[in-house]
Amino acid sequence: MSENKIPYKIYLDENEIPKQWYNVRADMKNKPAPLLNPQTHKPLKAEELYPIFCKELVAQELNDTDAYIDIPKEIQDFYKMYRPSPLIRAYFLEKALDTPAKIYYKFEGNNTSGSHKLNSAIAQAYYAKKQGLKGVTTETGAGQWGTALSMACSYFGLDCKVYMVKVSYEQKPFRREVMRTYGASVTPSPSTTTEVGRKILEAHPGTSGSLGCAISEAVEVATKTEGYRYVLGSVLNQVLLHQSVIGLESKAALDKYGVKPDIIIGCAGGGSNLGGLISPFMGEKLRGEADYRIIAVEPASCPSFTRGKFAYDYCDTGMVCPLAKMYTLGSGFIPSANHAGGLRYHGMSSTLSQLYHDGLMEATSVEQTAVFEAAEKFARVEGILPAPESSHAIRVAVDEALKCKETGEEKTILFGLTGTGYFDMVAYQKFNDGVMSDYIPTDEELQKGFDGLPKVD
Image (cartoon, rainbow, N blue to C red; front, side):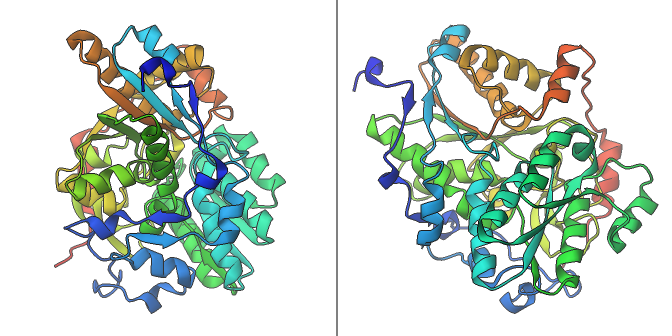
């Protein structure tokens, strides 16, 4: 089909919403290393995870063999409220850059939570309700996950306790109020309400917090409160599984017009949106059916892929969660208070870490002033104010398109626009006022985190 026939927005019919999630691990020759018991350092059995997670989610977490897993009808019906999400041809951005590149982005901000997080939140809330639980606990960085989970819990009549990274709690008060509007309780982390929170505050007085801190608090509350379980918005295999609807829809929309991306780009903090976007394309790559250049983009202030170590580490700062083999900066690493709260995690999904380690994808890090420069350019020409997290992908998509301008290559670029930035105006204000700064940790600072890595045989 000729280029001028491709619409600005490519929509699928609601009947084309995926009815199965795709599990990329089934096609991986080198599977992600197993989760380890933090005390014994032995591979965790399913029953050891039951006190933390819902049983069905444990099964999904440990499933390395089934390529496709049915989406329950109740979740399919909920998806219809906001899915399929649009795949957009960035004609105006292409024109502004004067590039021969063709740029597409999958927009996941067309729901009240403002991000892709609802794709997994509704699934995890469904399984909690099905198990007969009273409620769930979780952490949130920028607040998109907490917002999505509060919406999902409200839908199923579950209680929702959210531990929000302190710097984001203070920077994004309106995001906090959306969570409360949907019935969630929101506590800044680290807090004095948990044993692990008090220990972290004692060790790091005045800390701005991190996702690792908030995870520790949420897990403690879940395991000590009858009828509750912990749920997580990124990193875990089960979350990447649920987010595969992003990539499956993207590929279906592109296939309608015979479009094959050359480059696929996603921001990476824990890995949920990146893993979801790339899943069917990576599957083709793993099976030898097609090849794609896949780029993970992370903040220079929290460079898990680009400067981290591939090793077993605790998933949380309090060292109470299972050990995962991943690219990590050390569970004790607390990043600077940058404005991409959802990317301030010390480690990366074990699935994505293995794919990166095997050379199946690339990674790059970018500084936040460059990120907001790209965000502002994008907002002015495409009409969507992007979240700081998403803007990391925009930055690299712009850079790749400008390379095409230099070389004359007509490459096709696909990136994930994970959500909107309307609750991130403090960050935009600092950028517009010229007071935003960049921070890159030194090797000595990173070494402190590496020194705390557990010794695993």
